[in-house]
Length: 478
Image (cartoon, rainbow, N blue to C red; front, side, top):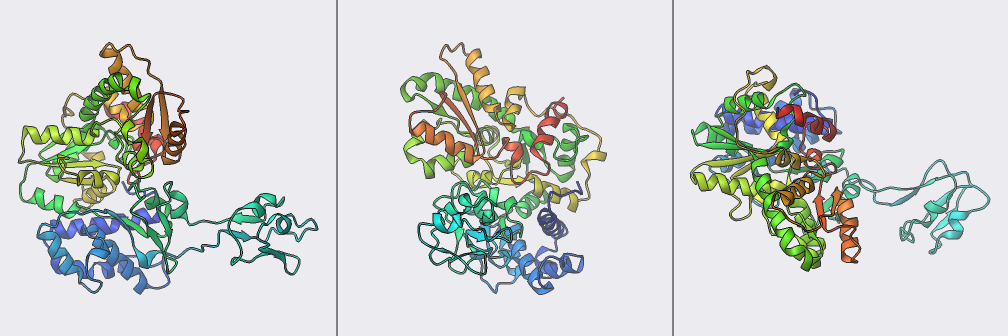
């Protein structure tokens, strides 16, 4: 639990852990103002130009940890006052993902640059291929006039030395929907019209300038108040706390935290597979193809970028929502907290009737455990009887898992319709297949769209890599 995918992940963990610790000890409102200084005194000082900027960025991160975007509170408002709002029962609002402006490095936005690999060759292919005459030779080296450049890329393709490179911001390059763009003062901005909250930019930005709001203090308050709180576990929790940590040990850790019960989201996945199989049997002949609606970021992508194809989305809630509604029907007074690697689930949970009261990512759960000094690896396992989820439902966590479960459900239902699944792993691949579908050339009749490459195991808030998590599944649920 002490290894991190990056220094950004480590800083995020430290902030969340300290906020959780202050909440647990009843000192959140009185001591939160000192937290940025406490963190820099503890060693978070070597990343920025000076300790003062580091503290300013940490203060913005603390706001996210309290459930607020910096845009939602006064610029000069003390952290203690914001913490008071959080303790008073602040409810998360959309959007849950935003940019920390002071942390944004305002990366260069000149798309094509000439590198030192330029040999000042005689052919001048770059000059001759440029349609806007933006390239000249200065001192035996190519020079691009950025005022004339239209970023067509012909010069880069024409250079035999590959001396002209395409440069784009990591956050912008990571966003398959084009939702992240340079703002008026060169800092990145998010276009909400196209953002799907997939979270790819969270891990892509090397400066940690993109963050998501947390409900961790709210969940801690529920547990401290003795509320009945159910932890709804995504199947991708397998392997998140170490290859040797069993499901029983994870359940023991959650019980130590105060959760009164646990439930597998895979139970909801089993129901979704049955419902999508029935919908497929009934609608595929008329619609020609159907798309799974399990991934909220994929569903948002279709709604925002392919509105003409929305009718092809299966009208079925996601496994998280199905389980949440099921748990609420059993006991409307309980709190249901989804725990998984997905940021888009935070937006989905805000929808009416989701049955989900809060969403914690695996990163937030790890910080909570660290604040309580709980290590699942050393705990005695407790019963893993959290429902009757099947291996098919648990398989939803990897690319191809939804299609396999729907195919199995079709067999069990005795359906005779031909099932030809198409697997789209990552929004770039989803985009490619949706374009084919729009042109009537989709090579199948069931599109499994997953925003994260590899499936849910590749979620932006996962603690381990997708392959490691996928390998742990069989052993974890044994």
